[in-house]
Length: 322
Image 1 (cartoon, rainbow, N blue to C red):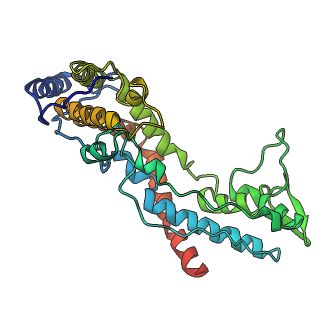
Image 2 (spheres, rainbow, N blue to C red):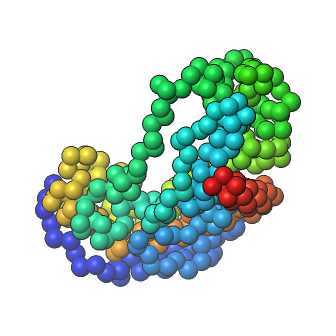
Image 3 (spheres, rainbow, N blue to C red):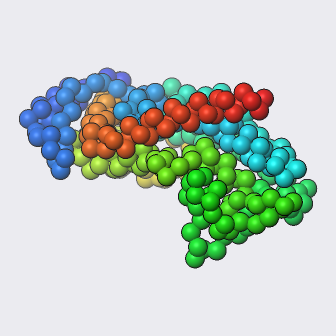
């Protein structure tokens, strides 16, 4: 790979022209569900870590996920106590990181690129969950925690409401019925699927995946990626995907932070800035998300209401269990 000095950070005239052209095309296009949605004005953006998306309010964020994990462990402990055991591996909601979208459109943090190259600090700093001390658990304790091994030919209850009425994959310990999946599954159902009207917690996230996938194929995003690729090509690098650039550049876990990788990462981010790749892609993806919200308003409204209820329940569980 050649060693090149990155060009001066600036939004070039060609990038401005591309952005204006995309805006004009989107305003003249239709808003039908089968075509590319209009996007309006395109902001100039680079850092993606703190971008806010329309679907975000329908799913738990990092802070809420920490609270829910702690609340679920309270429920596991409450369940275990019914059989004379305790659950010692309770998690505590930790500090919230910088954001979830740091590499959504590839590396885009100029300071991070200049210092660490392509090294993903978020992945490398993620703490490992504590290992379960199963060796010290007796057979009944394990049975209460995990439940019986389910017969794949018999569907297990999918809600807490169903579980309380079902004997599928249940057993008895100390004279009490152990629910299907044990206390682990009971805690999940109580928190995320208490009744048949519960919206699967993956629904908002799946809509997010759909919006992202559609944005990748959008002609305006493809033009922006091509402009970024051309920028990299002018400096001797053959890459066509900002999400796969480090692999295409021949980098791996052993040299992501090498001097050469740092120089290339700086150029990568600078080309994103020159072409406004992040601003264009974010605007297009946001438009797809808004359309999905309009098309699935009833389901998502229920998901939002249930998330609010879930967070209130989690707060009460944590307060009672502390």
